[in-house]
Structures are given as structure tokens and as C-alpha cells.
Length: 499
Image 1 (cartoon, rainbow, N blue to C red):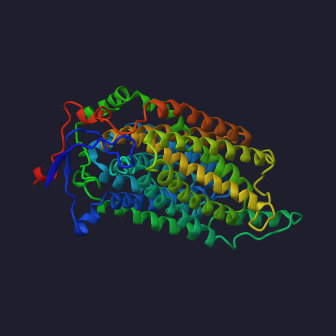
Image 2: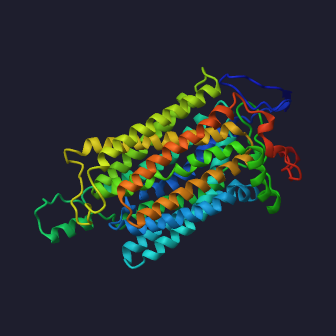
Image 3: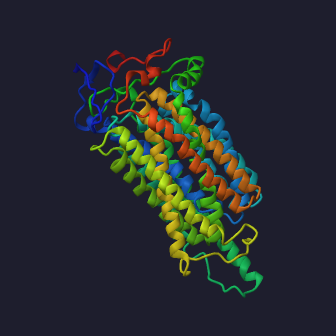
């Protein structure tokens, strides 16, 4: 049953797409209503990322992926993000041809392979090249999984719910990192013995080996990531999804490859403001290298790195909910006002956290941190202040990513267009990561990497301001759904038409 109506609410918390004469559908009830509820499906996508990217983050957040030598993991991440950047540019088109479930199924395998490569290297120390190859393969898989995730996460909620739904996803996704970090912290808690600085080089080498993650930790991560491989099978077909306001999610298109590749340029031509988010995209994972390798990996022993990792990803859950639900979806303010509020909070946090980091970076260099150096432990007097920096970095990361997704979601409700936008996002995000991980592998000074991180973060937010000012509106107009009206694109039939 359906009815015809028109919703166009200016500045209220219940604003929906302004597509005139929108068809309103009755949502299914009972268990089908629960299964086909947009929040349920977004949470299920979150659990896919809980098991796969979440475990990847837990491994990477240990610094050097839990190894003693950070060079191999840095090279692997450089290869990963290089292939990620290339394939992400086209992944929106691939998504619109294959559909989100197939993209998620194909994408999850790469995470298991990547984690397995570290287990293999622990068993066969000469297999470092396998880690780099696995990283390059994961880049292709990651482009597929993140494009499908971004499209569904931004298309399923109403415009008044987008910040909250992004928070749902981000909380579940990062809960995977929290669980993985807890496993790493617990399994390696007794791996570090506090030898005094005057002990022999033999003792130092013993402690150096204690700074490496054991096989059991990698096995747990591998089993969890393999669980994520089967979860996409339980996702609903997007064409059956009806939002909570009764509007149907635009059906995912299955056009020709040629038509879909042309859509990349159609999206840029019809919505050129997206270019102003490219610097923000570029910086959005750039800061991970300094946080994980040049701060967490450089200063702390393995169990302390595990605890830092745990509080970092836990802080992400709270940061995403704060800015997504309590700022970007705050109903008492118009959407444009909320956009400026979110942007301002992130800018303040960027400068506050990096000023704090600069104070610590002045105290050590790469040359003052040989592999045999005694690392900071959780019981050391200076540790509490240092761990709080990791907490605030977690808050910054989650607020940055949530705001970026929310801004894209404010520009359109069309899953096909949002898939293209997400592909752009992951393309430039991965390009930035590939550059900085390679710089770290080349042993560039910590201070140089840190300053570049700070400058890019500030520049990304400054460049995003004109888009917030001009492009973000109080509601989404039909003109913003440019790909919906694109000619010569095959439309997937409605559910009532399919047999």
C-alpha cells in the first residue's frame, strides 16, 4: 500500500528529501519489519566491518602491526593504500554494477589474508615480502568493502537520522577494534619484563623480543576476520528497503560498465563542490602513521601499546556518538547550523590535539629510539598524560570521519551517487596514507611526519569550509539527486515488478 504526498520541511529535525510527490510506502511489520529496518541493516554492515576492518585496525594500532621492526608493516601499508587509492576511484562504479552484497563478500577476504601474513611471518621470519603482497591485495578488497559500506550507511537513514546512523556504524565498527585490542592487551600483558637500564645487551634483546606479538594473538584476529566473510550473506537487498519515513531507498542500478564509468565525471560535473572535500579526504587517514608507528610504536612497550590501542578505539565510539547524534542530528537547530557546529568542533580539536602532540614530539627523535631502547610501561610515572593524548586522538579521528560522511550524506540521498562520493573519499584518503606510510618506511624524521600531519589536517578543514557554507542546505532538493535523473541508465524494477 502506498500514498502520495509531499514532504519539504525547512530546518526541522525531521527534514526529508524534497522530492516532490514522493511516494510513501507502508513499512513491513513483525520480524520482517525488524530485519528490513534501516538501523538493523546499517548495524549489520557495522558488524561486517567489526570483524574485518576492525581487526585490521586492532593489528595496525599496536604499532608496526605487533612486530619489532616497523619497516615491513610500513611498506605493506604503503602498498595497501596505493592500490586502495587507485581502485577506490573506480569502486563506486564497480559497486553500482555488482551491488553492495557482492562487493562486501569480495572485500572481506583481503583482511583475513593480511592478518594471516603476519602469522606466517612469525612462523617463517623470512616471509616479509608476503606481508607486502597481502597488503597490496587488501587495497583492492578494501576499496570494495568501504564503498559498499559508505553507500548503504548514508542512503538508508532519513536526512534527520544520518549523523545518528553513522554513529551506529562507527560504534559497532570500532567495537571490533576494541575487542581486538583487548585480546592483544590481555595476551601480551606479561610479555614485558621491567629490566633496569644498566642491564646487559642480552637482557635488552630479551625485552626486544617481548615487544613482538605472539602467534596466539594473530590466530584470534584471523578467526574473527573469517567470521566477517560470511556476514554479507545476511544483508537485505537494497531495493526492498523502506526508510522510517516511508520513502523507498533508490534502487541500486546495474548498468553497463561504460555507463557507470561515465557517472564518475557526471557526479563531478553536476556536483563540483565535492572537490573541496578532497583535501579533507586526503588527510583523513594520514595521521594514523604518526599516531600508531611514530608515537605508540616508538615510545611504548608491547603491552602498553595494546592498552593505548584499546583506549584509542574506545574513545572513537564516544566521539562518533557525540558529534553524530548530539551535534549533527541535534533537532533544535537547522541542518546548516549543525554543519557549522560540527565543523567548528573538529577544527578546535585539530589544533588542540596537535599542539599537545608537538610538546611530546620535541622530546624524542627517530635516532634516539634504537630497537633495543627501553620503552615506556603502563606503570611509569609519565604514562597517564601520554595515554590521554591517545584518547583525544581517538575522539578526533571519529569526529573527523563522522563529519566527512555526514557532509557527503547532506549532498545527496541517492545510493549510486553516494557510492561515487565514497569512492572519491577512499581514493584520496588512501593516497594520503600511501604517501605517509612510505615516508615512514624511508625513516623520515618523526618531526617532519608530524608537521605534515598537522598542516594537512588544518588545510583539510579550511578547504571544507566553503562547501559547508555554500553547499550544505537545510534539505536535499531534487537537483541534488543528479544521478537519479541520469539518462540511459537501466533502472532496477520495484519489488512488485520482480518475479
